Length: 492
Image (tube, rainbow, N blue to C red; front, side, top):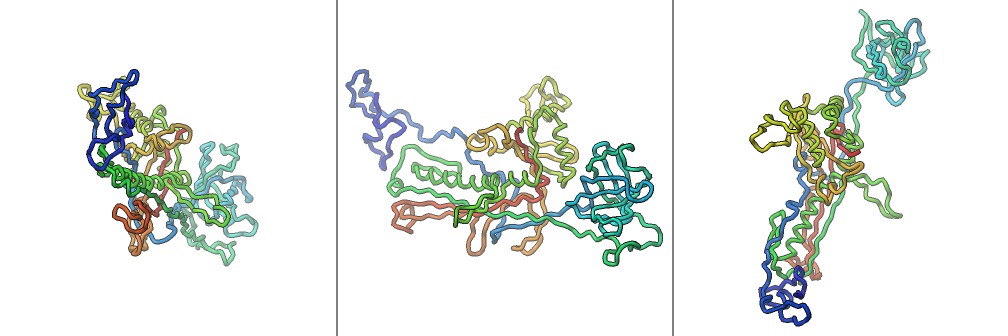
């Protein structure tokens, strides 16, 4: 039997009528082996609706769960983040001091300003040997005292009068940590030091420092074009899309899927965007790019490589200990690819009191007589709460789910807290999620998500083009505040 045209490529017709282009040919037989008969005049059974073999194909929704969208009116968004409150130094060297007895000379890193005052009390830690000492500052190079000549040098006296030398358990490397925990003055004294010049007398005033970050919006565009003739065709297969669009007109499906794809691009760009480090061609200004979520965490956050269930809680506890050194935000969201999500389930199940033969019975509403729930949507460890969910973007074969190799992204930990910032548009302090999107908008134009029609078909009468052009545009960027509280899970 031959089909003209081959089934699956039948040409639609505007009216429901029998044509050579949309029905089987049963009168063209006669050749050897040709089984065409009058009984083949009927159409095969055709399902009118498409089969949704990939389920819901859209990927967006991640940012709607963890962030917010707010307008801005500039080409750049700038925000400031607090630095640490207390004074601490790492990479410090210690040696026998210039004075008598067991005075100790402490050399602070050149990259850090010396803001330690005389009579400050400090803790000195040796991470190599575990040795510890407490001392009081006798001279500080920050005062530019005569005889020191080194602004990064402190002379201190340990309270136990023990020299910080290898013979007493101290390493010789420049690896010590020093932090100020208070001060100690004698009775009836002033903060003015006798050997201090008039210009620098008294305690050093520690001015608050802040770190500024910025991001720039990128312009995203897309377009769908259908000719006026194609718009007048009707098909026999009913089309439907995730946004509810349905009908027997194929261009409706194409236009709807273009919109859905563009909406996914809006989120994917905020996740994957990078600053452009390469200039444009001669005479052409290059797009500056933008900083997406992954780039922000790798630049300013925490990266965990090769997380596996085999390591159990030890590896995860190391993440918690690192979070303790940062903002220690209590509630956090885990967005994971499938294998990493299963690793978390295995890790949690392995510590269950009813764990037997690889299966947890009698806990978390499980029992031997019922279908087991082997997944965990949330858990608490230490002082932290974690809510775990799958991230479709990391599982979909058309995006990051297609590769499971070196440097692949396996998940991300996002704090669920908020920060208080001053909003110039509203003129007041407001609370915003650490992760949020800024889009260009003003009273004249809103570029959050624009769509418009051009051409001379489909209701548009803007040009002589015999087609309908559907245009999409957005201008936006992602603000990742306090990235030091985020964790990026990467493959080995």
